[in-house]
Length: 311
Image 1: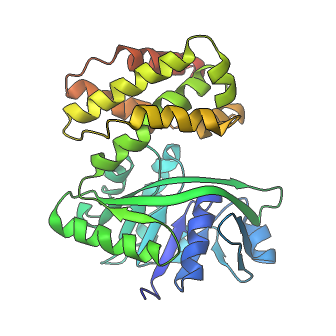
Image 2 (image 1 turned 120 degrees about the vertical axis):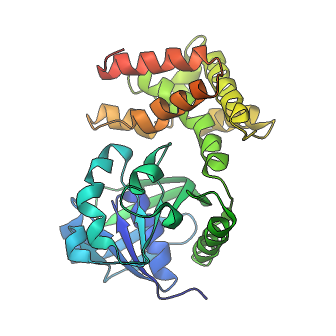
């Protein structure tokens, strides 16, 4: 068993609390760095209502700041990309000379932002497919579906891949389905085939859910066209995706029913939206590869217009 690692969950919202609780259940020393839920978790403990078995941590270790937490062996970044400006303040107090960092954030560019403070050889990407949400009680998190993680090193080499396999095994022992890969783009484009069109279109239409999107004339075809462009960009950059991924994503999204993607939720709640990580940086990489992506570009313009950003 891989036990006893000191782990800091930076940005312990619903997602961070879920994965941190699984790691604590597996025997690791986990500290949750939280803000709004601090008093509730400190008083009540952390409780996860999960489709795969509930978790109760009556004495969950919570801190308000990284300074209070102190150095850890592993930092798991779970806050959203617009918070990355906080790395300068929050990462250094969590580091010792061998600290490794995993980002579970959406989109591209997050690991590179972390590497400004941690050597790239100790930075890893964890691409997670999970549905978690807070409850009315800040000390309770609901895990509704999924949870599997694909790991890859920012430094795409054999040593990094070996270490990614270590983290895959560590999370697997925490009852999470995992796999390890060598190159980060190999895994990032896969999730972006869904996030770019569906997160984007639901946001561009004012914060609607996927059921409403599927009912709008022309939007299913538009989502498919955007997804095909994303696949073309991934292939041109050297990371061809599964041939059936477009049909698979379309079918699973239709089956979701009235699901509101995270960016649409952020927009409706007047919170910062992860524009650069999910759309801006991937679009720039597609253009670097020389791939024509007119539908993707149109979507980005629609999103920027919705968010009041310059075109």
